[in-house]
Image (tube, rainbow, N blue to C red; front, top):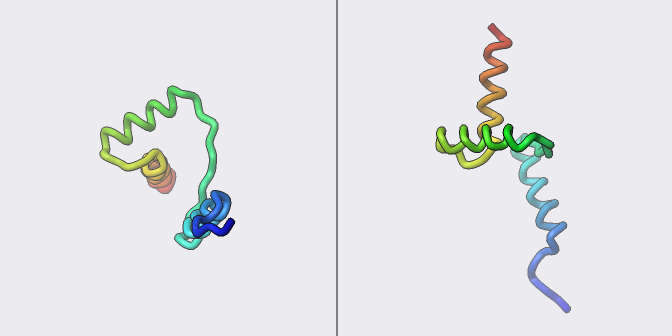
Length: 68
């Protein structure tokens, strides 16, 4: 039965390939609910689209502090 839709695994593979081409990687983190609530609060307060952007900001702040 031919179909023009890609299988979910093909879609995920293509998505991961696009991410890597942008010089980025994904990871899965196991965090307490309180930490996720904190990330979500920061995300909303700063008007960011996702938790990843919050983590990038926090890492950048820590990186800058470590360089001083």
